[in-house]
Image 1: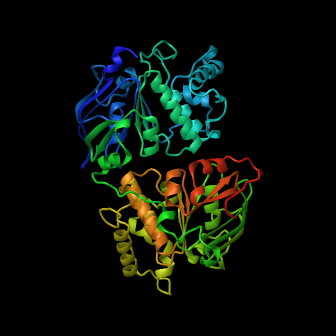
Image 2 (image 1 turned 60 degrees about the vertical axis):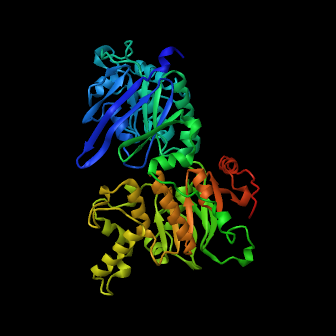
Image 3 (image 1 turned 45 degrees about the vertical axis):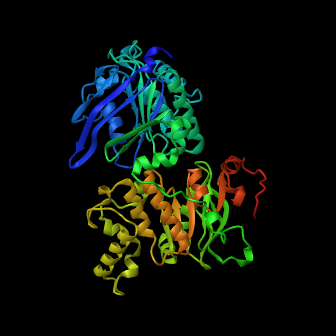
Amino acid sequence: MDASADKPLVFVDRVSKRFGVTQALDDVSVSFMPGEVHALMGENGAGKSTLGKVIAGLHRQDSGTVSIEGHALRPGSLDDAYSRGVRIVHQELAQCPNLSVAENLCLHDLPVGAFGLVDRRAMNDRAARLVHMIEPGVDVTRPLGSLSPGWRQICQIAAALEDRSGGNGHSGAATGRPRVIVFDEPTSSLSIAEVERLLRIVRDLASRGLTVIYVSHRMGEIFSCCDRVSVLRDGKYVATSTIRDIDEATLVEQMIGRRIEAHSARKASRPEAAGTDPDAQPAPALRVRGVTSPGKLESVSLEVRAGEVVGIGGLVGAGRSEVLDAIFGLDPEASGQVEVCGTRIAPKDPRASIRAGIGYVPEDRKIQGLFFQLGIDENIVAPVLGLIAHPSGVRRRSAEAALVDERMRAFQVKAAGPGHPPGSLSGGNQQKLLLARWMGKKTRVLLLDEPTRGIDVGTKAEIYRIVRQAAADGLAVLLVSSEMPELLLLSDRILVMSDGRVSGELQGPDMTQANILRLATIEHGAAVATPHA
């Protein structure tokens, strides 16, 4: 690496940005070196994504400057940032799934041949050059929507790597080669294997001399991939550290301003949990027998006892979320038996599941979970309106208000008022709102699908506490998580799925990341030896 590598490539000097009454960035100064992966961390609302977007020219700062090798970028100028080599890879995939990979990559500047028609050969060649720099296995003629989120993310990264300074493009724009790439929560919707592939790509980009600014909540990614980390809290700069000189506890303390008590594994804190004499354990609160759904699930059976957290591990597409959908009655094609506390519930009927005491926090709170056109109060009472209404069906507003007040206080949902819409809440408070909806006094079984996705480390600790308290209060918890440390931390037992089947069960000392991955990658029909039947 040349001598210029000793000098910052990107320098953020006293940048501030306000959105209405919210001070998103407050006098932030930080620098980024060439050839490094530099993490930006902080709780939701800390300002890390805002800072990335200011650097990329998507937001215009109110004061301060962003410089690339001493050149001050025009505030809020996407063109100026782009011409100096700044790119951004967004968390949400802003793509056209009905078009091919090549069409998506060249949509801004389609090559034109004779008679003004699109030159598809040139388009495919240009797209292949870009994608195959980082992943040779992508077929650029396929519809983008047919690819998994991980492959689509790779295509978005490839688009950011295009170098149009040497005339590769056809518009004649004088744009520079990529030198800085901002990744904004790039792994939030990826599987374990896809995350590993993405992290390899990120390290490879840095090895080529690019500056990678990496925004993420996931501690494992930061410590395995990044060289330095800068922390923001409430819009203010806190500290920059080299990864080898900081531990997770110190990093968390910098992010939230206090130290979070270390969590011990549930199996250590609950000696009466899984692994004791089966005859001494209570009857299952949830019993699932032979649940099948064409193309999704094949004869899935499981049991969860009151006071127990059973985790479901596996890769994306293994059938984890599909199991929860089938149990709750959301899959119209599912068959099999579901019992709650010994009583069989009607299949394919979510209302019957709710009456039986099943609560379900789905994977995507925005699409599947919350009613954003209603208030916070209406979201909380939605599943139990019929249970707390007068026998005549007339709503009991006083009972509803009391329930809403009790749930908001118990789950520490921070809001301006119960009548405000969920969209006014942070991501973490939206997730706590979903938990508040489903964890009522009549809940016996709690289904959780990725309960901490897209939330900061402080709120994640709160949700861990809520899950543990739910089990301590006697609920049977069935938990799906793509974060293996989370799965290992919260679960008494872990069921691993592969290809729509339960490929194995892990308990006690057998609960390791290596064993989860081994069972998750077992081929369909392979024999599996599990520690406990």
